[in-house]
Image 1 (tube, one colour):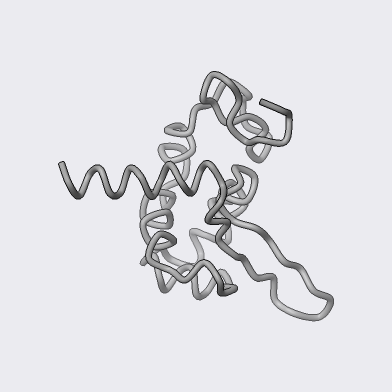
Image 2 (tube, rainbow, N blue to C red):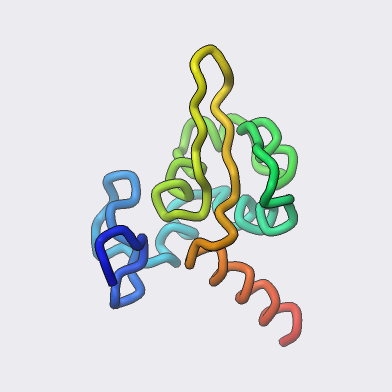
Length: 116
């Protein structure tokens, strides 16, 4: 795979918010208290819309303070699950990237777990 893909050929996620390049995708979920709930919430949201951290907090049930302080949202941006939009004078917004391998894997896991 080329260097632009957040998942390398071993299935690990590299460069996430300064984390160890040997960290796996499961490490992302384990290292951030709200990651699992945020990912579950993101799977329910409209990928064509933009969301603030407050809206992500509401959708996932993860406290805004947690999302703000621990870097969960930024880790999902680094992994390619979310795209970040920063406009001068406006609150930063986030959009789901439904074509991201990370999103596709999370959605497939959600479906497989529900069917299992």
